[in-house]
Length: 408
Image (cartoon, rainbow, N blue to C red; front, side):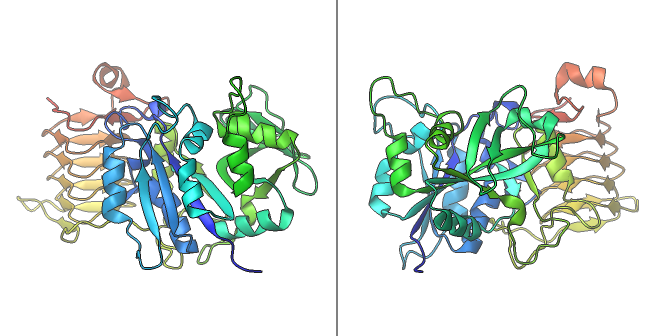
């Protein structure tokens, strides 16, 4: 069987309101992750490793930093027509923004027509995971489905935030419930639900037909709310079990790992997943790497402070250009170019690029956005009542200090 012609559409146009203030000045897929990366790098790396190299990224809100990251980082050889290109809302169908994920595809049907693929992979831009999409495409073609939906079991209490799938024994989706209050549980397991990952493989004709309005009352604007239920009702939707996906270099502990980083707490937790001695998500997999841009910065430096104070670093990631000078860093992610001065203590925290931590400062369970100068002897993360007056605090008590803020 000949290799199918595949076009990849990555949806990166959401507002990301639940991630504020990290999304105050950037799209959610452009938020830094794991120190050196952006969130979108994980989805794009999966396709790069699979050699699906014709990729369009649909953007909309606050897209400048995302567009710049893609244009500066994601460059494929054009010799064989490969590309990763951001596509802003072009208003080809009228003077309005994307009304939803399906409308975003409808407004960009020219991209599909120009490429004329056999199948279209429509994936989200804001999840942390490894996946070989070739295996999902192969199952899709073998099943004869119009659409295949990637799915993973999640705890019942979390399933209300996802589309939940009821599947038959052959993999056909028999019911799809988009973000309902009482989602159905999996057969034989009343503690978990089968959740859609927001990743789809479509036959090209099926996708083009279903997103194209058929009349004035056609309101198919969203994939999860409208398109997948409609194709389910038509008997054309099948499920792909993500837990069966095999990725080179991945051990059993990481198999099936997938995190939706849609909230401050889920974002923080996914970052902390990287720090265990044997992490549940391993960045150091050379067989299926995560690609990104690397700035021309010197190596990370750990040294004594100006007065000879020893530095202590444990269970942390230090990015290029960072300096830990006579300070303590534990269970934290220190981004590129971060400087932590003597006698400062940083624990269970995430420091974005360009942050400066003054001498004697104390940070606990904090996310500090780019270019914040933390003054000497500053305190955050020890008195929630006081912190709540000045900073954003997540539901689980994470302190978030926004980009470029001047701290007293």
